[in-house]
Image (cartoon, rainbow, N blue to C red; front, side):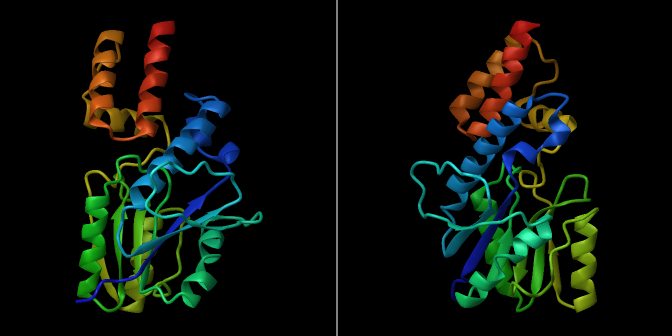
Length: 242
C-alpha cells in the first residue's frame, strides 16, 4: 500500500498562559522556558517523520530547533479561543493540499517517540475511515489523535477528550484503534505528572542531591530531550538550595 500524506497539527498556546497548574512548582518564567523546550523537542522529533508536514497553530514566537528535517507551516491563531477552534484553522490548508489524514499532537509529551508514532501511521493504512487514539495515562485526555480522513470527526478537546473522541467515532461508525503507549501516554500537566514521569523513567524515588545528580548525568547521556533535562536541572537546583 502506498504511503499516506499526513498533516501533523501542533496547537501552541501562548507560553505565558500555558501550564498554569504547574505554578506551585514553577514560576511564570520557568513555565515559559519549559514550554519553549517542549516545542523545540517535539518539532525536532516530528520533523523526522516521513511523508508528513508540520502545521503549527500559534501566535507565539517559536525558536526553531537546529537540524530540523523540514520547516513547519505556521498559521496564526489570532486570538482564537480554545484548542478545537485553533485546530480547525488548519482545515483550509489541509483540504487544499490533499492530505490523506491528520495527527493532532500537543506539546507536552516529552517522551514521544517517532518510532512509535510511525507505527501508528503505518497501522492507519489498514482502514479507510477511522481514528487512532493514544490516551493519556489516566484515560481521560487525548495525547495523540490520528484522523483519517482529516474530517472524519471534529476534535473535542474539552473535559474527558478521550471519551469525547471515542464517542464521536462510534457514532460515525468508523474504525477506532486505541494505542496504550508507555511513552506517548505520559504528558506534563501538573506536578503529579512530573513525579510520575521522573519516577517511571529515571527511578527517582527519593529526591536527594546525590541520587538526583546521578540520574541527571545518566539522562544527559541518554539524550531524551531538553525539556526533561530542564526539569531535572530545576529539581537539582532546588535541592542544592534547600
